[in-house]
Length: 40
Image 1 (tube, rainbow, N blue to C red):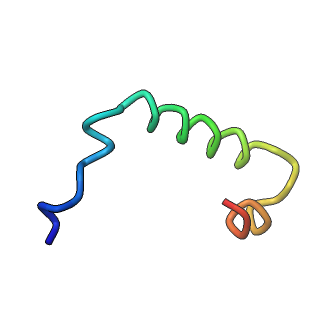
Image 2: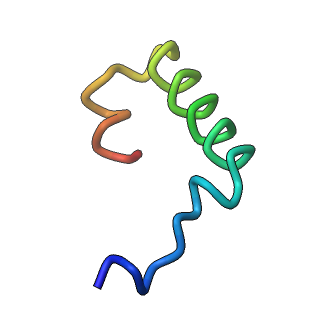
């Protein structure tokens, strides 16, 4: 079944870089880690 899905992280590494940047930005914000984990 795993063969049915495309490995989007291999197809678009730029997308993952954007996700990582957003995650790091949220973690370094003043929102608090619990809120960030709740919404992200």
